[in-house]
Image (cartoon, rainbow, N blue to C red):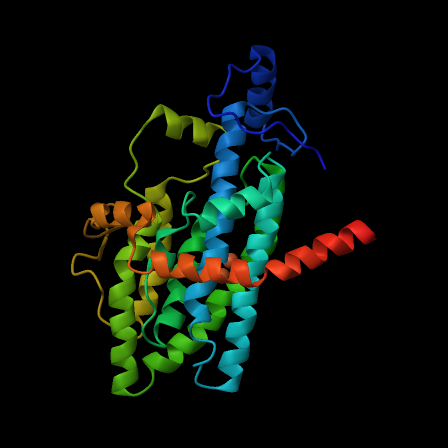
Amino acid sequence: MTQPSPVPDHPQQDDPEKLAAFEAKIAAGDRIEAGEWMPQQYRFECLRLIQMHANSELMGALPEREWIPRAPTLARKMALVAKVQDEVGHAQLLYRVAEDLGKPRAQMLEDLLSGKSKFHNVFHYPVPTWADVPVIQVFVDGAAMQTQGALRSCSYAPYARVLKRICYEEDFHIRLGIDVYRALAEGTPTQRAMLQDAVDRWWQPIMHFFGPRDQASPHLETMMRWRIKVKTNDELRQQFLRQFVPFITDYGLRLPDPNLKWNEAEQRYDHSEPDWDEFKRVIRGEGPKTAARLQLRNDYWQRHHWVREAMTAWGRAA
Ligand SMILES: [Fe+2]
Ligand SMILES: [Fe+2]
């Protein structure tokens, strides 16, 4: 494993010749491996992206975890346990990829636990009913699948490789969610009302998930040229809407946004503008469940201290 130098707070100027060779390589469609030379900004942006993804997988296991003890049948419980384990496994894979970019895994976990680093907005919200589980599995995993699916063709090879495995499992999570979703949608009036309520509550966070509307900027242009970003926020949001709005309409549920409708002339969905102030508050760490989820993660970190100590001692003895 290579140990590149840590990301500096103030990136220095890159060697112009190496930078030109890097740009040519990316323009030719090649990928960059962990040990290869890369611009400081490329390393910084890849690390930021992958660390945020890893944090989100780890924190994203917590909302659905709340329903493991209350799943309505043994089969649903077993499937949910497996799904939650997958998400923690995704975090493990991603922290491994991220640490090769120069930041120790322990530091990444410390930054997450202290609230210094971020995780995706959707995992800061409560899950008050069983219907929240399929809505997360279909729509939240479905939203994540748009970004992660696109990034399978990103230029950083270790991330692109690990995303293939992750997307394979995410696709299965969506299928699992559809089965629960269908059971509720075709169930009693109470079950349908519970599902409608969950769709309504989750809609805005899901629209937020893709980020604000595209605005041309030198930063976005660089991210796209370097293929750290493959599709824009609006492209991904529209791709999601095309794929997932039918899950609402086909089951006769009410659209959660009265302005959500297909625009035939522009071949895109029109929709209300989400409240971006709420999005900013949530990703700042002021979401309705941010403090409780971080507290839970911290409690387990303390409680499992003995496991880390035992593994370290075993590693020394081996
Ligand atoms: Fe995942
Ligand atoms: Fe998932």
